[in-house]
Length: 114
Length: 112
Image (cartoon, rainbow over all chains, first blue to last red; front, side, top):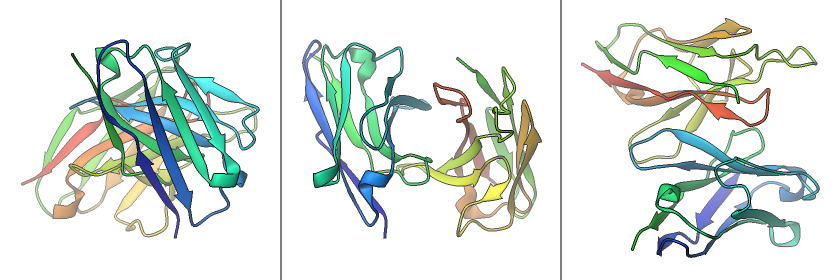
């Protein structure tokens, strides 16, 4: 059974940093590109970042470019999102999502507030 | 970036009646290989989104045949032939033909 479990969310002050993690199981992680998608409270879905199978191709939404860094460790079946210079508008539930958007994690909540 | 516009923003449907949601893109979603990467998702309150339809009309495994997708180039539709109580929630379209991937604003479906 394919499973992706997001973790690492929490409350952080504006300007602070946070690292999200996603642990995958039930499939060959190294064969699939991955995405992060977020959803602000009461709002719609926003794609955040993409990483290819080996990490050779990385893409970011303009809203996070230069502040967020996506990475993966295929040996650990894990995906990461390092978030820095956080702003109030980054407050959202962050989902780890498989390449074809067919499997989503349960989401991890990030709140940026003083 | 491609803008995906969904209508209506909300829909109240009688149990057993049909429902239809429209999604229009600001540019053609036909890729260089002829494929159209247009997905539909359903998100129940408090849950993660679930993909229902991929590539315009292909239902995902386990999705009832009450759900169908259609469309071409810039206009797409999700139809629910007979709405059930479990169909409540928000439906999103998403284009994956052009980077960045973009989502529609969502259509909230309520059942009366």
